Length: 249
Image (cartoon, rainbow, N blue to C red; front, side, top):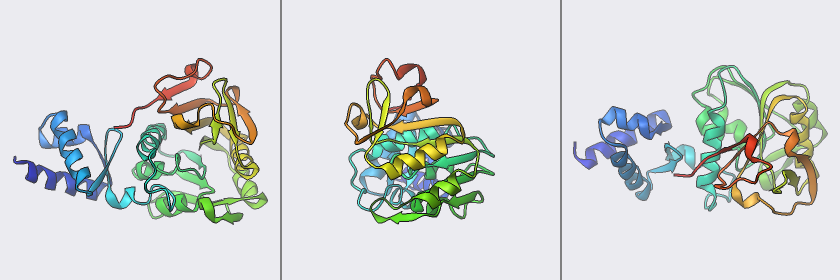
């Protein structure tokens, strides 16, 4: 099969399924993983898809993964890699909290194939991305903050606190090598705390740029988190025992 034929077939699969893995393409096309990676790189170069960790996402999905104004985010690839790994931890039937965060938001593209999920989120974009997929989605209500497309305040906390979650996924503005997690906004910290108090498993997702940054408020410590997911190649000793590391494509 000539490359242009493969590219057409790959693009058709991606547009139909929204996300495909490199392994799936290799088995379908009977080619090597190196050939698949070259083909995905070519489709990405032409602007037809967006590569992600372990595969590729349809352009229409990728375009809305991050909030308005973040389309050129230099951390888009590591955030997508972290989000994909997080989504792999989700089981059919789970009750989830997904916080409003550009690191958590790309999970939407990877949750569409899950069944019978109940999702509570304070992200308006997350509601939009997950709606119509057959799962049950609750927007938290509350004060809308246009800057990050999210809902905050007492109304948001009341709705979030009315559920019990199998897993709560959230990010942070800063994390120290000792595992102190910080936020620049009391509103953000309050929403995350409300979900953490009701979750069986608390999962903090962050990219390497957050390490050892300074935030206005210290909110949690590593002892209160069940799992970290990050693209950091070298994880601080305090975090290592409960960290999953990923690498962007």
